[in-house]
Length: 556
Image 1 (cartoon, rainbow, N blue to C red):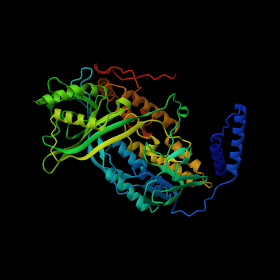
Image 2: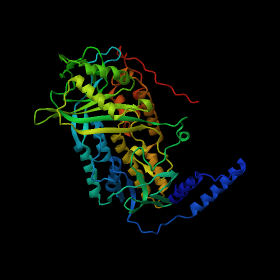
Image 3: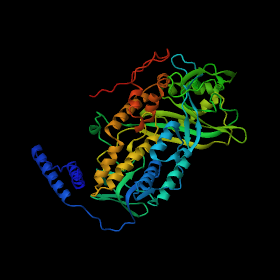
Image 4: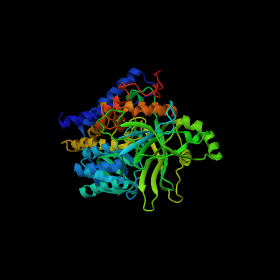
């Protein structure tokens, strides 16, 4: 379609979607006729004129990016360095450090660096573990001390190194200015804000907290899921029969030095899940198990049982369970069974003083309403767990205390609006797992390419640019993939801990390409995600695994 005709069609579509004026007392037929006539006038008027702003601005750019997290910096770096666009990055705290630790599968991080054309991403890996451990004992006859080992490498991403990398890309491009300011704006109606943003037919004007003005052809919102700048898709548009509310992943964690090692956790493995609840048990104390390397490593091309092995750990000493621990366990066990949490452990290696260091985080995978936990509860459970396992924190060594709050699922952004949501604002967080960094960075390349093409069009239309960007983030196939992930999140948050342990034990016995594809949730792995939980098993499942029927939600 010629660019001028395409721009006119976008303007016409926007006019047709404008709300009709309703006069009380009119009949429906008169009201509809009046609305249709008004829309025809709007189309004719909009197509025949284009507003050309004449005011002077402090900054005039192709793209304004609002938000100083990973999504904002990634989009600013790609648009300025890879596509040559002029960019204004509005960051209220440019010198600040991003708060969360990021863990990713090494294979995915490597593929992501290739996708972005940034081999330096591999330099942002601060630690890696060749194997990944999980603990799902306590359900369907599995002993408490059984470990399931995944022969897949995991990495910890240095968040500060990642920010420095993207900041250097921005600086060396010479095309992006980082502005230390806030945008105090709130959407009050479709494409209308109470303050700070004004759209017209050729772009948008932003007024920042400093009083500075930014003129941009395209505005990107990277302020997170709870953004005030974007509208969410109505249930009628998404095809749902009720509003899709988000779930929340809540976690509390810290890094510390340890007096007597890691207990049952292998210093050479990343522990992704420990869903055991025996630290709440009133009965006999469980022994403290120490790791021995008894597993043979295999390539990812072998059978499921070869790269997912379960075995029991050797026992060497008993730990007393004091009366206070028993009392705490008796009051917390029922809650932990109904509102499960797990701990993941990132060993940080032996320090110069000879002590082991590790990062521990107690996590509620996803919850809503009464199943949503708070930080205090996660902290209490982590303290009980470490005490029961005999993992002793050296006083005064706690650092990097982390309070993690991640909205998951929920409605997608309204794909017809002018402001383009990216990252969490675009609901790219995995609705079942909370993984977000890889999916966000993977989608940023498609968004940047789509916007670059629109900016180069002979007759630029901001509405066409926004539509192209949203189409790249949420194509029909990606929407279907996300629907399946949302289903997974709804299923997981409804299960007690016994069924979660049984489910994950069976889940990780699938081929790596299947469970890995579902956990990744980014475009490179589409297809595998849909098969991951629906594919028939290749062999009979272990005796302790049973089929779990998810809760059904029927349309009225």
